[in-house]
Length: 120
Image (cartoon, helix red, strand yellow):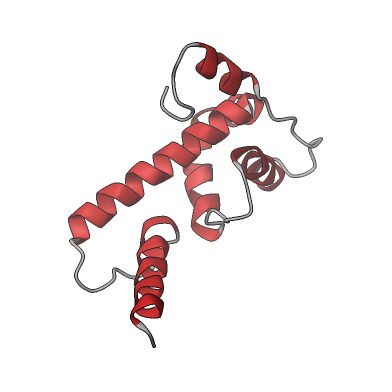
């Protein structure tokens, strides 16, 4: 393998460790990777809450545990977005329900307020 291919493989291993419960790559601090993985999970969960607030409301206190269960088997895809993620989670968490309409309002209001999406 070329150095570039080695780097790409190492990066792919790190991404798997961060978002797909992959094994910790050699040379990385386990505590830091675990903390960053937790932060990325929380960011993804909040994005889904904003994109599909009706799902979070319907699940109530079960939203967090159900999302964690779903997220373990459904890591983020490179060809997806938060709205697609929210619709896929809703279809899994609320089977038989009508397809969930995701919202773009949170994005627009955040932009008007000067905030970056996903940061409040």
